[in-house]
Image 1 (cartoon, rainbow, N blue to C red):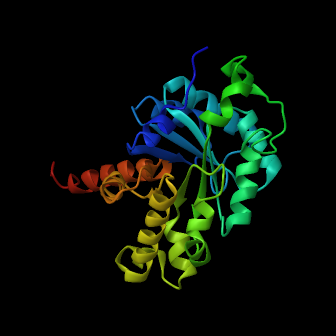
Image 2: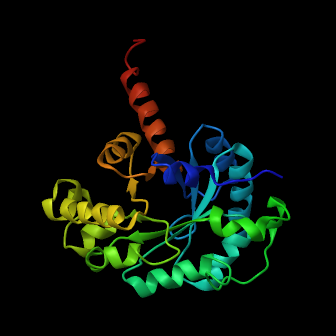
Amino acid sequence: MIWQNTAKRKMRAGEAVFGYSLGLGSALVAEALAGSGIDFLMIDTQHGSFGSDSAIAALMATGAGGATPMVRVAFNEYTRIGRLLDDGALGVVVPMVNDADDAHRAASACRLPPTGDRSFGWGRAVTYGDDYADRIDDEVFVAVQIESARAVENAEAIMATPGIDGCWIGPSDLALSMGVRPRDGGQHDGVQRAIERVLEACRNTDTVPGYAAFTPADAAARAAQGFRFLTAGSDRGFLMEGARAGVAKLAGSKGAGR
């Protein structure tokens, strides 16, 4: 079987890649969005409605549809990270990484010895083929979430940690940690300076800067700023956007036939 993390290859070549975050717990949604041409899907097991079986189904649907299957783990814990890698994730996003020790723990859980301490053994990832163990450390994309003022202070040390490929800034939690309402973070100079500081830390460490954008337009603007690992919306967000647009059109037509 020929397999590779095409999203990671693009990022390492300097390209921006875009993904959608999945939280509805549906493999059918994953299948549909994976076929849209998007670079990756991020199965959110932190805030999303995924259990272990539905996460496996979504990973299968994502890979079959041609997008790179990635996950956000619930927290920085060895067994949870290893389990999702065993299930076939080719990218792992670890939340609430605040210092280099947190980053080292995340990286070690994702990589086999001697680089890390991931246990040798896997579940459905065996479908990648007999060369899985030889290649997975190169193929997996390991990103940490920088989403607190403390993490920004430690950004360069975090990003310089061996085994960390990139980050994914969580702007809402970052704003909250700075005493700013998330809805105001986009216009807050302090929050924006913190984001720029993380971007600079990635440049200094030759790692991939990432950002959790809320819309495709937001993601495109952040790509122009220099970010290369970007979510551009979520399954729930797109569903509600379409539903609200439909309701607005229907409301406008209520009196048309009278």
